[in-house]
Length: 118
Length: 118
DNA sequence: CTTATATATGAATGTTTATTCATATGATAA
DNA sequence: TTATCATATGAATAAACATTCATATATAAG
Image (cartoon, rainbow over all chains, first blue to last red; front, side, top):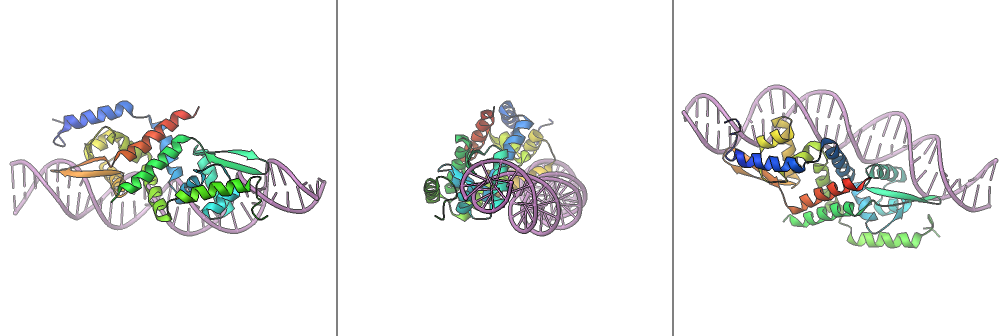
């Protein structure tokens, strides 16, 4: 038989069929991957953790995470482009905050996964 | 005053203080970021989605996601190194599965965030 | 012991990406 | 208007990464 590449080919075919049934299309997978990538740099993750308690202006974000203004602004642009954060203007300042509750859910799950290693 | 860089400096100091109180240390942030990065390539994310319904051998994963054997093996190595998946041997085959429920929680949250854009 | 099969690994290469520096924009105050 | 402050942007460079090809290992079967 063609699919006899392991001991339980039918079982695996079933798993694949089930996975394919709820599999996002390639476009959605690309978007999800890009969002994970946006969160995947330590400096950007740190920004998000700083924003977890509320809205902050750029300079306060910079002070909270270290680094220079330009780097932080570039990082915020990446986070914003990927809908990880949103922002609004307040006079001279831009106030950044986490886009929605799903973002913090992703980060909380990652935090819990940390404590899962022994 | 030195921290008058925006209209609500005390508020921001409070937000920062609150965030710092639960901020993981740099080592943990690095680990979390590396894990997000592991999930952040479309091919690796697709592997995870394929594994969401259960355990699969490498060749079936390869068939499910497309690509060649070597690429998939390298991707699985990255996922394993970052504790996103685990594996066990079964004769000639290696059977891969998602490391734990937190991983799928991260992906579910990302999926829900998708539908949140309008 | 030899062959076949499933998976893993190493090295090379082309692409992506973070960071920096310099400068630009946008908002306010003088 | 001009000066100043907060933030954004562009270009350049250097580091990180995915993918490929060739080959190695590990298990099983003959």
